[in-house]
Amino acid sequence: MGDLARIFKAYDVRGVVPDEFDEATAEAVGAAFVEVIGAGKLVLAHDMRSSSEPLAAAFARGATARGADVVHAGLGSTDLLYYASGSLGLPGVMFTASHNPARYNGMKMCRAGAVPIGGDTGLTEIRDRAAEILASGAAGTGAVSSGTAAGGSVERRDLLRGYADHLRGLVDLSGIRPLKVVVDAGNGMGGHTVGAVFAGLPVELVPLYFELDGSFPNHEANPLEPENLRDLQKAVVETGADIGLAFDGDADRCWVVDEHGASVSPSAVTALVAARELVKHPGSVIIHNLITSRSVPEIVAERGGTPVRTRVGHSFIKAEMARTGAVFGGEHSAHYYFRDFWFADSGMLAALHVLAALGEQDRPLSEVLAEYTRYAASGEINSTVADQAAAAARVREAFAARDGVTFDELDGLTVSGPGWWFNLRPSNTEPLLRLNAEAADENQMAAVRDEVLAVVRS
Image (cartoon, rainbow, N blue to C red; front, side, top):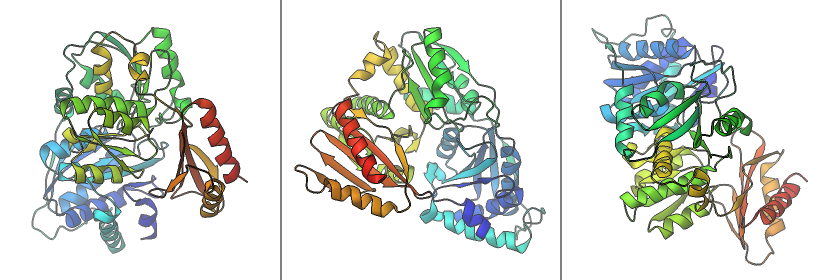
């Protein structure tokens, strides 16, 4: 139980292979998943890590031993797994550790229709039942008993073409002008999916690191780190490309670079996609988390939509989308969620929207996005502090007596003043406070940012 408690997180499973997460564990979780979810049939996919296919096979052994049939999609991105779950109406499991280093692996689980499974919606029960199976000594020996006369079957099925066709059916790219697009797959699953999705589009693709390699020999597959964008930015400028796209390891997040090689804020992408979705679905709800730029709710309201603010984290976004029937949701971490995609996130679908917006007119991307970028932002800045609550209290006290300042505590501490705001959130796993600040111009943002950091780090 101790080991499983370490690798079962709030929303997924993740650990070092094989020390924390091995085939015996995967087999036990497969059996527990079937029991807890009540799955008579399920779908699996896995990323390119060397440990992913063996772990997926072990999970399938555990699931079939409990009598469940398994549709094994093989190599895929996380949003391909969501497509499979939604289109087939089956619960699903994706084997990936996303952007984590090569020694890690994990599982993302969902119910039929890509409904996420988290700690309070079944993941804890799966963990506890898997621990019981491991304690019995059956898992990993091929002796996980089904209690039935016959086990389930495994069917291999290639879903890549169906996934690509589905995404292209959600965004009309038929009339766009020819575009040169540099894509950095980071040796992750984008190298498997991008070619299939872009097939037949008026796109000249310039691929970077499309070779599937879970050791990530070129750079980490994490586009949130600026250093991991350097090769993409250089290639966009050198090739005269119209746009650059970077995907993380399991290709569910997408980062955008403009024609000058400048990094584009995910908030600007959120506002652009929201505006497009509101044309198709007037008056709809758009979800944004509380560290997204204030330009997002402003633009949503101006375009006739209803902006709804949530806490940071995909579980909060997905829950609020389901509650409100929102047509779209965006996070500053470059996760984008679509009602037309079973309320699940797809970086690839967001990329197609950006390509469509760019290709439908003749302006460069930097000009297209200018109307969606209204403020200066700090980006997320981490500070190591021994007492997170005390540091946040000092910040609140420092701003409490100022005119026009308001506070809210939806997620950490958000302080708003004339022309500026900042949010200070504690990490759930590390002794860190995370600061995001925004203001009307760069000088004002820098002044607010530096003042908050001085108090936090004092």
